[in-house]
Length: 149
Image 1: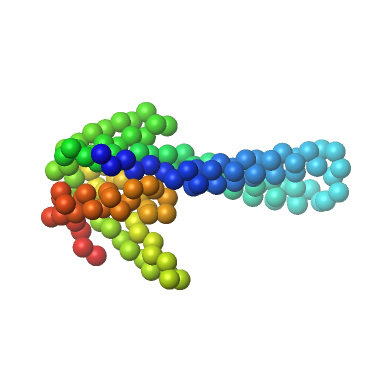
Image 2: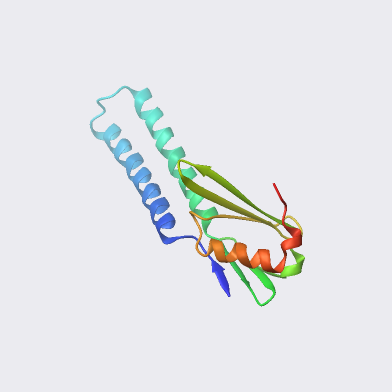
């Protein structure tokens, strides 16, 4: 069984950033309420930017919590925040593609798996565990459905 899940350091960093931006908004609003040393447009602009940053980080955090399980001729996807758990035979994969990008002497890999219906699963080697094992399993079981780029 190969279980691909988000790396702990990614979840920790996104959580830390969301908390940091939220604390920044609270401090800014408190500063406006008590001291009010800057013009009002500075408070409005900074509060808007910090709130948008916190919301975007929270959306990224919530969309990143997904689990992919491969093994025994089956593929299973679980999204805890949506309450979705789907399991398919490995032969039901419509297509899969691995993209490799080389930049600054580092290699970034991105895997996209198209399952029946509108289900599309994306993962990368920097954000998910067991990435290489998942790609090798897909190469062994469904090599004919790989999309070459």
